[in-house]
Length: 112
Image (cartoon, rainbow, N blue to C red; front, side, top):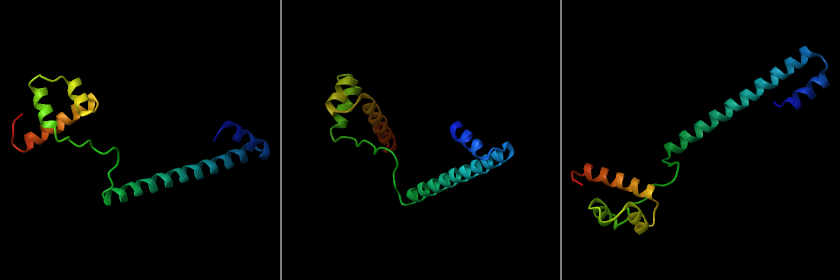
């Protein structure tokens, strides 16, 4: 509660002890409301996850021509900047795609 509201309440009530009691009750109510809101939010997130809702940005799909670009990148005939420009993505996205692609290669038993 901001200082202006506290001062206003103190002026209206006039008695410091009663003012403290009223402020304590208001703070407890505020805390209960905040706690209930957090609980409701947590339940909503849990229910959404149970329904399979994905949070955050969707993952970038690996383009069809990525294996060729990746091979050129690995052979050092294509720089990261050129590869990312070719795919029309950022360099950071290119790095993430390389990581995912290499993971998929190692998971399938293929080598780089």
